[in-house]
Length: 194
Image (cartoon, rainbow, N blue to C red; front, side):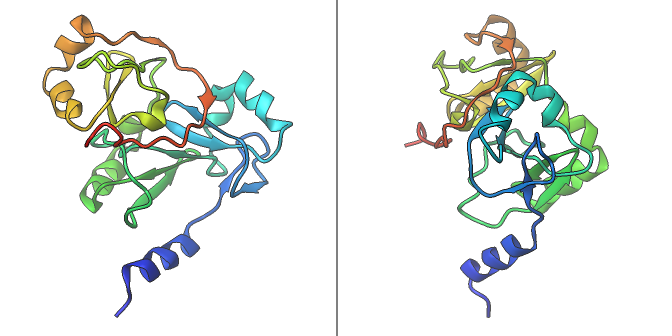
C-alpha cells in the first residue's frame, strides 16, 4: 500500500515544470515570484523581473508553456492549500489550475474559458468585513462580478459573498482597482480562520 506522502511525491514527479513567463524555455523551481490576477509567477532571473512587472498581461498567458500557478479552485473560487494533499490539476493557456475535487476538474474541462478570464479590476478589500487583504495569496477565495474579482479575507466570507454578490459588490466595502502585479507574499490563505 502506498502512503499519501509517496503518492504526492509520485504525482509531483509526473507534473510538467513551470517555466519563466518571460523566457519560456527556462524551467523555474525558485526565484523572484509575483502575484498577478490570482496566480503566482516565478521569473528565472533578475533581468526578467522588470519585463514581467512592466507587462504582466503580455506574459501571464502562454499557449506553449505553463508559466504560472493559479492559487484558487477556478470553479468554486476557494483558495487551495497545495501542501496538504495531492490535488487534481489541469494546465490551460499558461496556467496550472488545481481543483478541490475531480468533479470541479470535470466541470472546468467542459468550459475552461468560462473559468479562466481575469477581470480587468480586482478588490483586495473584503466586501463583507472591510478588511484589507495583503495580496491575493492571503485571500481565502474570490467571486467575479461584472468585470471585478472580489477577494475575501476568510473562508466564512466566501459563501456569504456568493449568496449576495450583487449586494456586496454594489454596497459593500470592496474598492475595485486595476489588476496589478505585486510581490509574492507566500501568504497563508487561512490565517483568519482560527
